[in-house]
Image 1 (tube, helix red, strand yellow):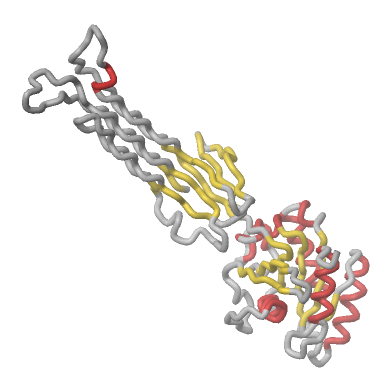
Image 2 (cartoon, helix red, strand yellow):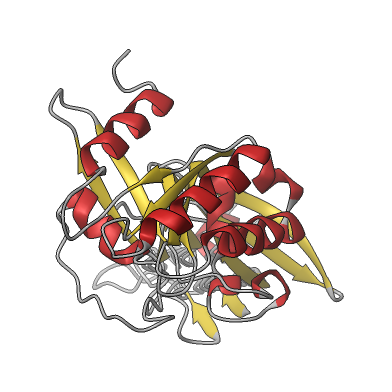
Length: 325
């Protein structure tokens, strides 16, 4: 949760013209400047909030007070909070949350806190009946609210892998992205995004989430914190390892997706059986194929080490997304 505050408006000025040979100069107090606004703005390429919301309070500048010689005070600078595409902004009031904006477009921005307006100087109050006014107005206060930012990354394909299934390695094989890949379960700690570039100019955006194990939908493991990102993917790519019991892995993943959200089950699900080149993988492959067919799924066997099935997987993703239309 972050408290954001727009800048206050500067006060109007009370002043009178004072020059040589002008003994009765009129009022010349200037207006105060407007305060700065607090704005969230999509920054293309961001995949996390980073340091944008590291502080518990974010404030814009106050407007400066008016000055003599009818000079207005400087307006306060806006405070821009850069956020990734797919950020939802909630306002917190009396323990409840209200959605005030969903930034799903790379050109979107949203004013979170409205700025205070500058006050009027005494020059504004001069009239035929009041040649020397001392009236002025104070600047108004900027709006202050408490917000919560929730990120749901947008992608074409979301890789959801069982622990140690090699889903991060698969992302590298498909996209050529360079990243550190370990052989340990739960080695992916943050979402990773990369483009799969196709020969005819199309690009597919892939999102790799931390591993999902049993109990992820209820908060178990790292993956539970990132399942919300799958909601904005067009295709879910379920990555299993033939090193273990593929049938059991598939059952766990489908149960976790269903427990988290029924909407995830309505998306197009594709199953990839990784490490098909390992000795003894053929038996697990047959068992998995039978179990998956009962769910209306037809797995594709791949190997990042030998390259088996990788091109077929690229072509399948292209067909499903309509890239060759």
